Length: 161
Image (cartoon, rainbow, N blue to C red; front, top):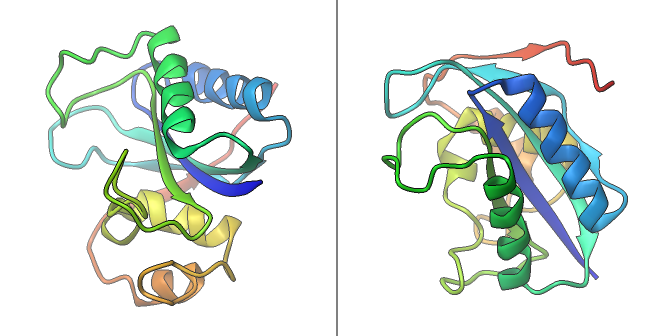
């Protein structure tokens, strides 16, 4: 079984899509651990603020099969793949890490956004503070302590019912 971390984000009907994503992940993977939910300004474009969190689970699926499941979930909730890369979205599920895999195919792992975006790194460091980034060799807590980019991010109370 591989331990995977998944970034979850939405800026369209946020609460609904975040809950839907977590429910779908539980249906596919069983037990899922979650970080707190954070609100952040859109990065790379002008748009509504996002809700973001990170989920952790264990899987026997391959990297490619995990990505396929995530795309199926996104598509089931109206993800528009014809829109610009930096644009609003109903649901965004990204595989951040797959055990200690470092690869370029079928996707680049570990995902570069871990070190680039507070809305990925903060919830990841909260959920897995002692886990080690497979390239830097630093824990996610250490990476968060050293994070120096200016991105606004704040926790939001979230009703999971």
